Length: 142
Image 1: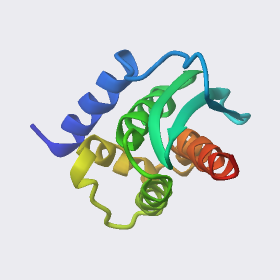
Image 2: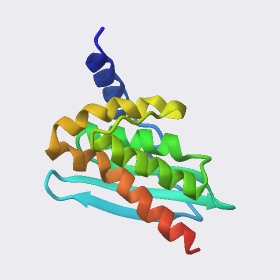
Image 3: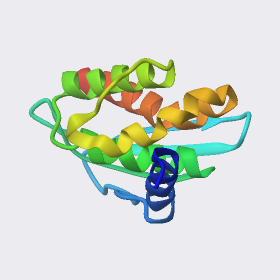
Image 4: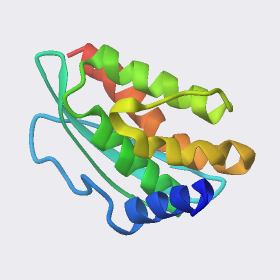
């Protein structure tokens, strides 16, 4: 099996079975973003406790890349400090720019590395990560 096939399977698994899809009832920061060029929308909710992302969930609609990316992102940031969450977002930005970046702790994210070959799809992949940045910034102000 080729790496591209494996990556495609990982993306489709996260798209068809998104992790952390839903709503957090209380004590949350909510960020709503959309990508008007293709119609992707996300509502990201995060719960912070003592400077850590205690929980993260999303509701959204869009292409397989945007949903899979949101699923992977919410998995990766749970339990991370706000600074670590931002650092993950920075590393993901690097991945989308074609930089060689590893996500040892959550390697599913690397399945999105091929997106950088399709510039129009980068916005799909980064939507959830941009919501993460906004959410963490507002969480720092609480």
